[in-house]
Length: 358
Image (cartoon, rainbow, N blue to C red; front, side, top):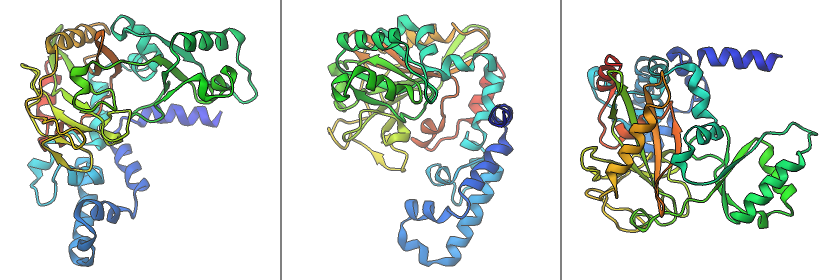
């Protein structure tokens, strides 16, 4: 009962700016030095006067502009004036925009990965099954286990994702052969609930930039003037090293895409503030890299953007498979940090002008 009450309270306040700022401050209290050392280097820590001033400014920016401590450095806030700092959509204020753009009743369509799949199944172009979360002591229904057995017989290698998850957390390749039995695999997935989906076979054009991960496009759309769909700073997202995911928050690299031509129009950047002219693993140059069949990708997201009445904003993730462009995920509370970090350009005024047209 207490847990349910906490959930109700959280749902009501999680979009409030004051809650986001206060929660972050409490969670990161006394940890500013970790961020200073990460972004400025350990040598700077001996300058105590400078570090004290930097700490104060970081906290000030958190409560005034909503910038989390990593954003303070990633957005290059140090020494900047108020106008520059206030131009960014920071994590501390980001969630407050979504109730202005989307309906709360539609949220689960995007937060629940299986509901997303069922809603946009024709755009996914692959098989997916759901493994519901089981309570302690509960046993799986035989037909559910049989469904996983039949799925694995058709797709010996597959992808497992938590039903409610973000930032690539918990996403991994798997197979029944890696478990003692189908029942054992099912029990593992059912601990938290998951979707099991057919692997995306990436086409060579997109594999060229990093073959180890399925590289994707994040194409945010904004519906204005009733039915006009505009693209809001789409990005290419690629993995690196041994990672099978390309998420910016999981160590991936992002670069901006020209919405008119589909060509990458910036260098790459990661969430540690590093800049890349070329991909560090393959040597492929980011700027000028042409997204294949860009017009088709745009067609898919524009069509999808008009299928959920009352929602005006969504971030669509697409992959280019051997079958063509397919949907990976959709997120109606998609992060906006990456598009701003890449060129250190704030997008708040632009988003506000689009909201005024909704």
